[in-house]
Length: 561
Ligand SMILES: Nc1nc2c(c(=O)[nH]1)N[C@H]1C(S)=C(S)[C@@H](COP(=O)(O)OP(=O)(O)OC[C@H]3O[C@@H](n4cnc5c(=O)[nH]c(N)nc54)[C@H](O)[C@@H]3O)O[C@H]1N2
Ligand SMILES: Nc1nc2c(c(=O)[nH]1)N[C@H]1C(S)=C(S)[C@@H](COP(=O)(O)OP(=O)(O)OC[C@H]3O[C@@H](n4cnc5c(=O)[nH]c(N)nc54)[C@H](O)[C@@H]3O)O[C@H]1N2
Ligand SMILES: [Mo]
Image (cartoon, rainbow, N blue to C red; front, top):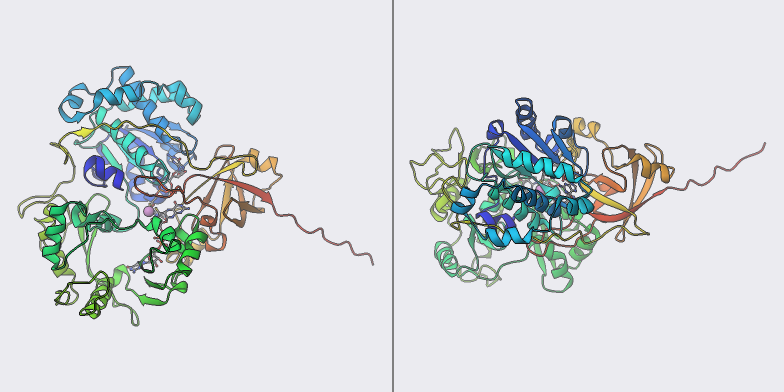
């Protein structure tokens, strides 16, 4: 997440999972932890049982609310106002950590000025969280000796996602909570090895190790290592690609391990764009909805069929070993990339210009050679080797062979010197409800399914536990529309329409509905908004305006006989 990268140097948990047990306050905001990170959720429940105060901020009554000291039910898309108000109360009541701020932060006066008017009463108007709760939470958080923040997509999947993360960083810094056990700022990473993918530069502005593509020294360094002149122009974010295709700026796409036809907000737009590509290559372990559109499908091996390393959510780099051979023609991803690269050799095709040698990984399965190369080009992994992580992983930074790794970041300082307290102005979501589309839709996950279901929906046990799409709606909204629990309804936005079952519940508030995005037969991304955060280009999957309608049954003809 680039916002956090700018603030702290990288987007990763600053602290450890087991450290949760050392916390005395936990603020869980926009994370349905017991369903989406169940192991971490268990630690939180255990910590709460041991006396740590748990604060949950979520528009839905998630399971974690059962263990919470306070639950703040904000309106979706209002987190920036809520967090600014927490900071306002802390400073107003003199609860900030003065010494920490003086030693480790800058821009405090301007920051303080910027939240001068963010009173709890102002925030109550916007968020619908009672001002007294905001005051209580601000006091609990600031008085905690080890107060940790845990957040995920409820915070980031907004047009204000980067601002929300910066606001949370402000809260953590002014209370002196970065750099000590049981505290910190902790984005719980989503996919398996998404941390490793970010670390390795699967972001258009970074080479491996967060070394920027617009930094001339980094371009020179990697041009030398890879023996090819590299570009200093940042690439496109995945979310910017559909428009780039439509605008004729992008002609070919090679998608590895993603199913955007189901997972991209406003997915029909993405699907139409893909149809305009000159060449679409999809590399996946299954023939997905996206692979069905491809000119070429490259069958990949799954995690259990390959060698390498994964970096987990606490930055720990761990070995993965092949347990079974891949089926049929499937190959591990690295070998596929290697084979394609070597066949490009000698051609003048874009992106491989100037290279003279074949990719020099020579000993199958190559992963060990790549690992050694990573350790030479990113100082934070310079001290790692397969021998050292043979049995137990090591958390980066690990700068030399004797270094034990760094479970907690920022103990003695920040990458940029001092932490910058940024001035955040709250701005609401891109699309708000109106007379035609009166309900707010938020989307997300359930415990038993994983994203577009390519993997989990092939598992009988999981599929039996969560077999079909549904829309969670408040009893008063259902009553107003004469909708009964379990009844099939139509949900539509300005972009599309789906049919699914109503689940009547008071987990959401009046006016808010929730739909999981796992089900292709009622794919909620046909409805969602693809408006982007201007800074990190994440799409606003968590808020859009929709309407729900009863499906009018044709009256059953009365037959007289
Ligand atoms: N079972 C399961 N686990 C998973 C995944 C999966 O598909 N299935 N996916 C993995 C991945 S890649 C990721 S990124 C993570 C995501 O993990 P989470 O972010 O925990 O999952 P979500 O369900 O997307 O949304 C989290 C919460 O955000 C709340 N929310 C909605 N709008 C707002 C808002 O405006 N503000 C706030 N504060 N909260 C809001 C929702 O009510 C929900 O409880 O899960 C990972 N774990
Ligand atoms: N409405 C809405 N939309 C969302 C979200 C939301 O909360 N709401 N969340 C967003 C988020 S956070 C995420 S992470 C995305 C997830 O979106 P996607 O990443 O598109 O979803 P997955 O279904 O996990 O797709 C991963 C693909 O990788 C394949 N795969 C698995 N292992 C391997 C492997 O080793 N090699 C290769 N080559 N392929 C493999 C799987 O078969 C699968 O097809 O969805 C995003 N979209
Ligand atoms: Mo994710």
